[in-house]
Length: 313
Image 1 (cartoon, rainbow, N blue to C red):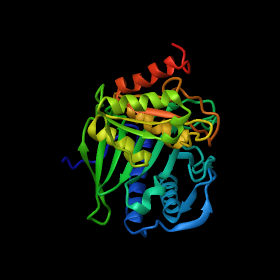
Image 2 (tube, rainbow, N blue to C red):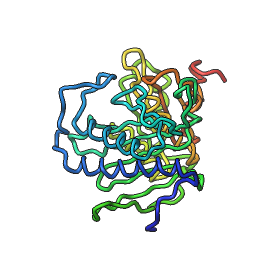
Image 3 (cartoon, one colour):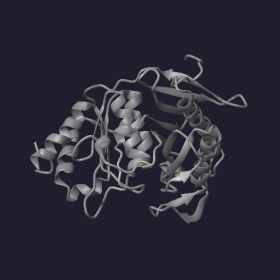
Image 4 (tube, helix red, strand yellow):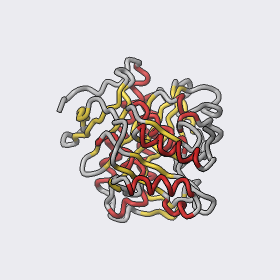
């Protein structure tokens, strides 16, 4: 392992935002290490109707505190508070994030995570932009070890860093230097399987993976299920819906940042029409369907969608 300073950008402001996020992840790791087994459920819900945990709120506060402190973020928005919050007047960046992805499985001691995307700030506050306008994103996992998968803009590659928190401040060490996702994998993580009763195209893709010997690995947490693709450098994650069981994944806080990382690591993404990053942002509560992973596995989705007439050839 290489003990280095985490240098992710030559631009001082972007480097400052990344360092602020890493410090927030360090604090979040400590919060989660000391939370109760049930996750300290509150009596409140977020805008999407999800029950909030005390750890959700603390993680959100930690991130906004660090982003405010760095001085380079004009606004932030997150899954718990899906509206733009002004932080620093004149800040160069906007950060969108899911403070605690997978909080519904925290009581079972499954891995949970934080997802974040960094965008350039302008008067539009992201409305009308696309996921491809992201300039950096990351996903931190709080499991048996705390790691972050992050795009290194300076070197144009996706890396993994691990938190070493035995000292008072904590520090991050590089543990996987250049992540490149293979063209074809053998792992699949399909979400929202209730929808395959009516979504016949999705059902056919799932059956393809079963019949072709793919290994099923699914926790119910988007962050860990997608991050295993980076660490094993293969696999596919998907989640599509129907009328009865619609997709509930949030575009700004989950789908766009993770698809950005996947594509930067050589994989592909698909939203039922094209790359997830082609989606035009129309609001802060926007949802999206998603498949991400090995390029050839994502191509299977496209071909089946064409077969069923959902997508034009």
